[in-house]
Length: 260
Image (tube, rainbow, N blue to C red):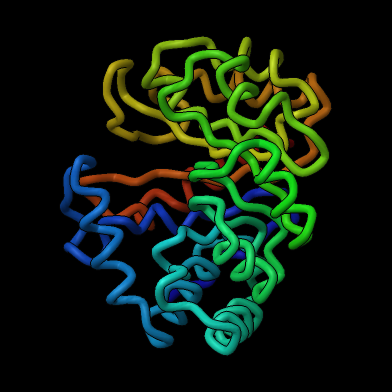
């Protein structure tokens, strides 16, 4: 496999891109839960090493780990250490964990030196989430899916604080048919992580090449720059009918140009 040189930009590969890997890159978004279970069952040490090697071979030096690849129901301290060592062997740094906030997912982040969880808050109130994150030393960011305003996101995290922030997913903003740049500006300094994704049309979640859909990705990045955002840009694409590695280099390079 040809190795593409990694860059120093804050661009990460989201392993949720591989949601369809266990089914030959064919699945339906409505079956996400089944794909999650299948991925948990299929992700042993050999599979994780293969995934990490391929990510590195496509020029990435950072990853955001999808919960199914380091799942609470199978992870322990020893396995977490092994997963972390494999990342290091492949020249990769774990910069986020994509999943639901819980004591166990926070433990996984501790074992793997992952600084933040990006996803759903689970059954936690903002006060409970803050106390958990402070205790474990790991931040949490609420990721938008159905939400259409910054205020809806802020309500979930009780207005936000040093431990609780926002992760903007540009693709889901496109799906909801709202202005990503406006929401980014409204989030301001509480916006602490991003999932950079594009979708073909509002009202659905069919992903496509960055810059070729309706998610206003270039404008979203410009808005992020204007608010002084200095965090990671996690490239996300969960295609239902193709291998995301086929477009990984193209999308990474597209992002690099936008960030230059």
